[in-house]
Image 1 (cartoon, rainbow, N blue to C red):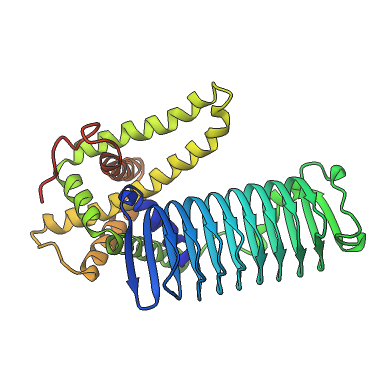
Image 2: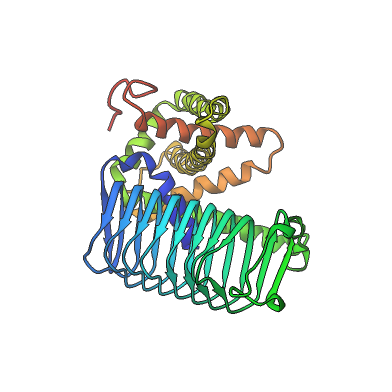
Length: 376
């Protein structure tokens, strides 16, 4: 559960990353900022987010990293979870690694490796490897099985697969696996559409039970509350400013969110008209998706606070109370989805409220809503 939690928390905290924020709990370290470099002191688990993050000192436990550029120079004794536009891992990972980005480069992973991206370069893997990408390159030894889903595959010198090698390719006839990588008896090459049409019904029930639906809904509410609590713990002053501005000017925040979302989505189509902009299109799509996700998370929290204050209650001061309010907002936002048509517009308004509020702080003052400092 921590993987989506830290990812979403970092996305929601995006506009607050102009200044470096640091939170230490027991032996764990949470750090966020525009450019963040971890060089010590010793930690158990490490959580980092920003425009660029660098892990330059060993991590005794797991590392959770989200940024446009992620660089792991030192060893991570536990598991690694990393996401960004470019993710480069040169330090040894002692556990499993889950890595995703447009460009992914990994070195030595002692456990299993799961990687997804457009350009993926894989080093040595002590367990199995599950790789999805447009261009995939193997440079090291894979001790376990390997599953590759790719358009182009390159096998570098010294690349081997000790287990079975299954490849899903756009053009299976164009894929040639050298005998030095794996003997033909352990290699299976299939059409990529066979992977896309896999019979998942044998693993996932076609119709979930009522208990599963309710359990999934409550789990999503809990995760949303934990996301908000983590962001509040990392940047309490920023979250307070967002909340006060959204509650003071909800209509302007929703309108601003609509303008920002339209600009982000429309810029992708404009970029397609230029040669250089075509390469930036995936980035704009990712940024738009991040903004929508972050806006929904913040909007749900503001909804919970607004309902609480409307009932004549005082704003709680501790994290536990704010966690409860975040869960309250997520609960009502989730229920809104059950209402045909009107529910969709309500959730859309909540999302635009969050996006507009975040954009007001991320953009230069006066561009949207911040004509003056928000009341405290």
